[in-house]
Length: 168
Image 1 (cartoon, rainbow, N blue to C red):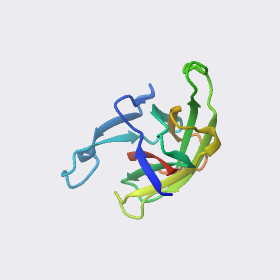
Image 2 (cartoon, rainbow, N blue to C red):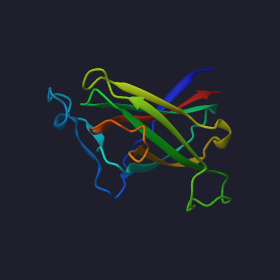
Image 3 (spheres, rainbow, N blue to C red):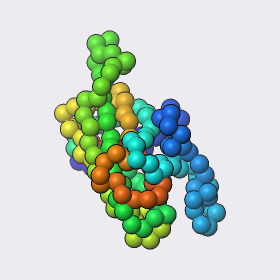
């Protein structure tokens, strides 16, 4: 049995309507202006801001599901509260894709990097039984500025969002 990570951000990922979550080239926040890949910016606000997307649970999924947030910041103090809400929809012609509400919400508080732009990983454990092979997972990822624990006074820079699981 192996642990596998797959990226779950894609072209269908969209920000909320607040204007505080958006994509920009990393060269805007980076200092070396070399790596111009697109990153997601989650500004520092006193609100809950985020993005939405979806992915399919892989054919070789057997359990131990985690969401991995790969991020950084220019700030070196404070904490960020990440909140991942999701709903898994499966079974052919049985469950609606257009549902209200979530199946589960998980959070993690992670501390700013010790030096600006250091790579950070925050992990959130999902209830493995909520997921089955070929389920369509609809999700929202938030930076929860409403939470008292979100104290970092700078934008959080999201590099990747990954679904981590054990295979067959």
